[in-house]
Amino acid sequence: MDASIQELKEREAEGKKDYVLLDVREDYEREEFNIGGIHIPLGNLMASFDKLAAHKNSEMIVYCRSGKRSAMAQELLRQSGFTNVRNLEGGMLAWLAE
Image (cartoon, rainbow, N blue to C red; front, side, top):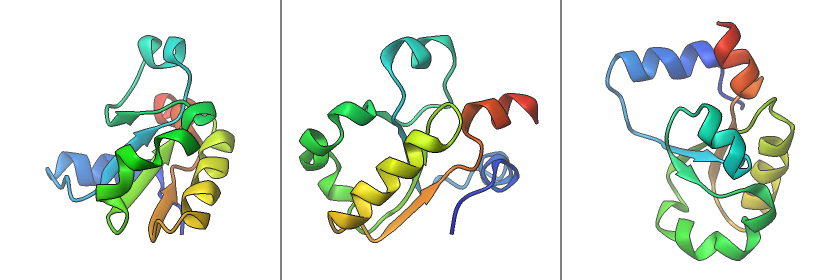
């Protein structure tokens, strides 16, 4: 199940940091605006699974600009054994529009 912008903002407002945020955008996109988390551009993701290994069973919320790259990252992570990966619906475009 994907994560909604509203759900994530509510969890942040309540101080619930019981999840891992993963930003799969390019460096320049992250510099313009980000909501934190681990930054691994989608093109580097498969080579970086070892950096994420400690989070294999954690809830991971993946985000990008619009939700398309994060959906690809979600699938790659699932195929590699990550058990609870969620895509942030609409990405940063939706976050800024809220």
